Image 1 (cartoon, rainbow, N blue to C red):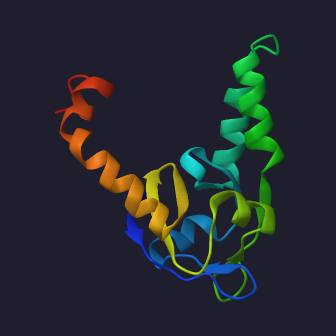
Image 2 (tube, rainbow, N blue to C red; image 1 turned 120 degrees about the vertical axis):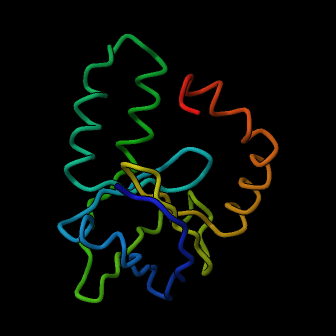
Length: 143
């Protein structure tokens, strides 16, 4: 399970060092792709395969499912961390997420998200006011 917030830097070759707490799970290989709100989603290969299985059940006749699948799978890139635990973020994904030097990497349960730090701070500030009410609306009975 992935959780926590980290602030690595993107190097001049478009690589990021994976947070130490994520390395064991991510070291066998990852799949990164476009995420929602202009971040990147990072999955273990196994989790991405499970994700694929769920999406493959969606009917081809559903326009929303087709669109979502196109965006997720056309942007997907399988990557392997190097010996220094760095992973290259492809140029098209760096552009999509507006990634420059300062990154915020967060754990979100079954996936990791990579954000431009300014975009993350803006997103977080915009969510703070409604955070207290979200749990009741999204996950009834949780708290």
